[in-house]
Image (cartoon, rainbow, N blue to C red):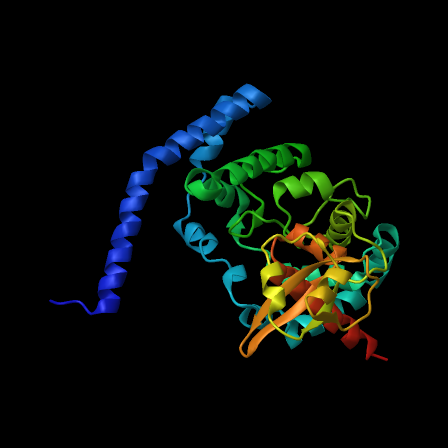
Length: 330
């Protein structure tokens, strides 16, 4: 029987996956053994306990597929449609109303606007509705032992996860999260939890899985620690007279151009800014051409949460929509 091209392609892909799985199995075992050895030698973990724990850990093939095609690889006009929706805006207004006192307290303490915190929760987990169904230890182990391109990063996060569980007295097989091991309402990685999670309701437990108070404050603390500037702009649209600006586009996200430099490229910001203001020139793909923005320091701070300009712009625009919708309520 002769296979059609799509069927043949699928058959070849399945065969490749099977071959890769077989080829990587010894490497996965070696990586796991090396990780356990390091945790025993460097951090004085009990070898027998770790051996027993990792017997229950599962390597998930679908995690490899998902991390290989993240949403941030989409063009902006498609990415935007996922997050700037009436559902997220209306749910954001309700979350704000339900948690108004905590958001006001966190905004005063950390200097981060309530709408930004709400928008991050909206983009990350739809305000706690979609926190992920993978066991965190399975996700981190899969990416540590079976995904060489990012194994160093995720091995570090797996180490921090075990430390987190020890400090919080959690069973490592219990916490759930995303395919990348991000946890709870704010989708913190284990290292972020250890560095920035806040017990805001003072019950002696920083619970980002079930306690909105702690999740709200943890996001505020994260952004504040990454140098959020209170009462400052985030991003401003730009009008271009020609294509001279294209040479100044780059993947680096840190603001490095002064407004005076933008003007020399025939670019004009729609809101006047001091000439010494440092911005990042950003281009977002639309069906009929690109739109340009000047990202300021606070835009850069949002990219420290997720290193993608698409993510930061989605948070910014969702926050504005939520603020505007909330303001229309009596």
